[in-house]
Every structure is written in structure tokens, then in C-alpha cells.
Image (cartoon, rainbow, N blue to C red; front, side, top):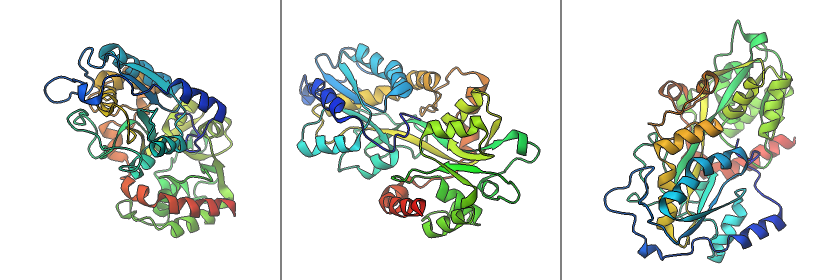
Length: 373
């Protein structure tokens, strides 16, 4: 996934300082009040020609193929259409966002961040989005937040070894953690400094909790269930490691990001997905409080959400589009790993991101303590 492990934020201090020095002009140009984005309601993917002549913005994301795709699909075309000069920086680092907001010196005008963190920072680090500038009408229902919109979508999915379980594939997370019926090692995320939707929900379902009764999560019960099968668990803390586990056949099943699952299968791994009860995940785009030209920043977000931009982003990165009308041109295998189709959405668990955002810090402490045992 984007620059994964992207949950563990940070980059070389010297390089970061240099980048911030070089992009210190971000947000300069005409005052926000002078920006004319044109009449009428906003339309996702559209910006008035030359509306941002003289404006400089900086777009911060996670680097790698993901950010390259964002730039090619949306950021550079936006600059060409609007007249703005758009710089790119990264990887996203939450301490840098906080430092900029605290110092009231914003150099990152649009930030790609983890959805839970973005939701938690609404009104603290990120400002509310203006619905007159950002058109969210083509987003999947319930995915936008007061201060952010999804940047793309993927999923936490159950992958199983077709050679071992092809005749009787696991049907969901209860089977994933049933080591008697499905013997062998299984991989789950093991970030010591982070916790996110996935392992806890799977454990509770395996322990008999109904999918529509998961929240609020009983974390202690979930950890007790995971402890009962701990000898069969393998922990991964980077996307690359999770993919390696599939390709090497070190595990019989794995809970992995759909993008890594796709890459592993594309590389020849003898695994298949079980989409039943997969957990949808997304990144989010937001504007830091104190951005020098928030109207321009939101115009970039609005352009990014367009149908053409989202289709191209998917074609370049394999992440699923968040514009419901986007129809990326993909091969058969890539199409199978889209998470935003109506078929896939019907199979998804309903993740309570608001609950997670409110409770994530406390869960991280319990999770890291459990991992360290």
C-alpha cells in the first residue's frame, strides 16, 4: 500500500528539512478572497481554466507508485487546467502536519493521510471542507467526513492457499482462525505502534459475535481469541512482508491489503481471495488548518475526485476508485481486486470508522502490549 508501512510515519530529518525549505513558498499567490472558481455548484473533476494563475500549492502523500499515480492522474492535470503551480512532497508525516499547524506556517496545502487519523484531527489539524467547492455527490455513501474525503479505496481481505484449501475454501474470518479445520500458519498485521480495523474484528467474529454487533469492539475478548491461536500466527509489519509470505508459501492463509494480495497473485502466488467479510479501507485527503489559500486547496481535492481522474488513478496504481461512476480499463485479474463494485460492497463488513477514530489511541496501547508478550 502507499509507502507502507505507512502507519509508521517518518522520513530522514535532513531530507525533510530540505524539502520543507524548498517548498516554503507553498500557498503563495493571490489571497483566497481573490480566487474566482467560477459560477454554479462545484462539479467533481472540474476547475475553471486559469482560475489559480499565480497560486502555488504543495501536495503531500506517501511517495512511490501511489503518489506517482496521483500526480499523473490528478495533480499535474489540475495544474495545467487551473494555472496553479503544484509541488509535491512526502512521505506524509503527522508530526510535520502538527508542527506546521502549531507554528501557523502551513507548507503542505493538501495532505493524503490515514482515514482514521484524518477523522480524529477534524477541527484540530484539518479544516472543514466547503461543500460549495468540493463535490462529494459521486462518493460512496457515508465515506466523506466533515474535514476529509477518501483518496482511494482498498480492503483487508482473507487470502487462502488454493493448493491446500481449494476443495473447501474458508468462508470467512471464523474459518480463518479455525486451526483445526484449516491447519497451518496464518498471517495478520503486527504493527507494534498501530492498530486498525482487521484482526480484532476477525477475532470477535471467530468467537461468535455477529457481524452487525461488532461495535463497540470488546478488545479484551478479541485478544483472548487471538491468544488461543497465537502459535499459528505470523505477524507482518510491512506490505512487502505480507506479499512475501504469500509468494513464498510460508503461510496457509493471510489477512492482507488487497493491493498486496493482487501483486502476489500476479507474481504467481497460489492464493485466492475470500471476499466475504472483507474490511474496506481508504486514505483521505484533507486541508491543514491555516492553509494560506484553502479555496485553492479544496479546488485541487475537488478535481482529484473526478471520474476521469479516479479511473486513471486505478489504472496506474490498482487502488479502487472512489468516484462511483469511474470505469477504469483493467485486465481480468485487476478487475477481480476492485473493492468498490456493488458486488464487493455487498460482501464488506460495516466498519465503524468513527468509533475507531475515537478509541484508536487506547487500542494501540493494548495491542502493542499484547504483541510484546
